[in-house]
Image (cartoon, rainbow, N blue to C red; front, side):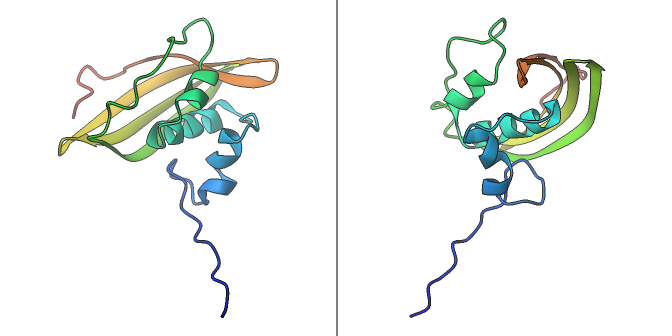
Length: 137
């Protein structure tokens, strides 16, 4: 009997790669090479409820003690769009994105401009601002 090849699942971040060759590499411990790659891997981390990864890639100066991802049973992530990625210094960058999701059948979007900081060769999420007044569209 012929052995079936394992099915490669697409990466949640939206790039045309399979998860193992995309965000899965960063989730396994390889540092993200850019703030945009970290942003994509963090989005995938939320989709897959990878709390340890999300906390480890959050800068210590703004990191919460924990995340409660277990209560998000009715949340379904729908997609990520990177609108802008720019360096703001040698070890600083911003990423503007829109993440779409559904909760209890109602669609929402999170539009954020996130700040990232690189320390010792690792990028970290620092904080973010919401460019729109109404993020629940």
